[in-house]
Image 1 (cartoon, rainbow, N blue to C red):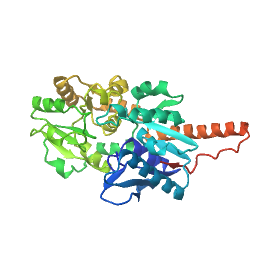
Image 2: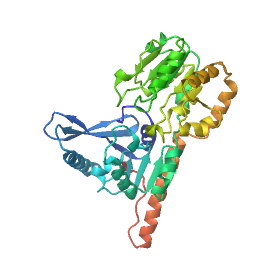
Image 3: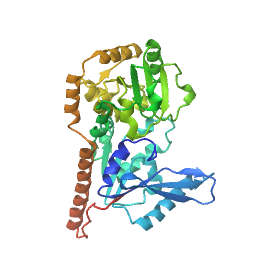
Amino acid sequence: MRWDFVWQRPQHLLSRAARTYRVIVFEEPIVEAIAEPRLDMAAKGGGVTVATPVLPEGLSERGTMAAQRKLLDAMLAETGQPSALWYYSPMAMAFSSHLTAKVVVYDCMDELTAFKNAPVLLPLMERRLFKQADLVFTGGVSLYEAKKGRHRSVHAFPSSIDAAHFARARREGREDPADQASIPHPRLGFFGVIDERMDVELVAEAAGLRPDWHFVMLGPVVKIDPASLPRRDNIHWLGGKDYQRLPDYLAGWDVGIMPFALNEATRFISPTKTPEFLAAGAPVVSTAIRDVVRPYGDNGLVEIADGPRDFVDKAAMLMERPREAWLAKVDRHLAAGSWDKTWASMQKMMRDVVLAKSAAGERRGQRPAATAEGAVHV
């Protein structure tokens, strides 16, 4: 997941971190026909810098890790040593475990070991990261329940919302994007990464049950063969879209859909799109993903469906249901959270770790540690 791939949890949090800290995102490498490794640095919006290792073709696994470590160390020799280390992939431990910082955070947004083509060494690297981390954040309650016994300080921070951004979809008179404008109504829409977590058979069967409905599917296709996607006149695969344009697409949908497969890859997911659909004012039908059922299904905010027939029946009900009372309930729920609030809580925990270490150092007669201000995230 590169910085410019899709805009989700890492981008929401680290762009907010960049308001206080100098943030450097050290990406996974790309491979080119070059003689020597290099590190490409690119300034992104919001003050984030992305560092991308570019490695020669044909390196062994050990050579790949050694090259990344060398590039990382050379970068830090110029930027200064990090005050904070922030991990999304435990595999980065293979080339960064020698680094130290005032606070080390593992923001565990998914159970990566359950994903297709997960590295064999991933469980070992995660165990190492648990030993090194001061704080572990999880992207949902189910993931928290799975990880809470593995570290002394695990905290659940479910997917939050940039409500103002998606609320733009509720405004009257928004122009339909060109590639969606000719698609008839009713429209049922999905946005997000299209991979092994999507139940493509459910999409195909639902579309077959209602050939008069049109399924608008936005997002890049990864880890699965695009040729395996169902092809029908009423299923429209429109590809990935810029985050800024998403409200324009959602404004033209009658129902939002989350047709996730129920498998190991989705067992612990907490889809960011759930509150985003709601903020856009789109009624939602989803399969029984645990972190969608709790709290969204239980609170009557999202309809939970079991199988294609139930999926289309729930969608039909949502098209007929008055929205005023439901929207009021949605807005009350969404008002309790935001990415700003999530980041503020995380930042306080980081500062508390630094202060605790400083106090412990003073008790041992050591020089007090500085605050976490001005930290570098890698």
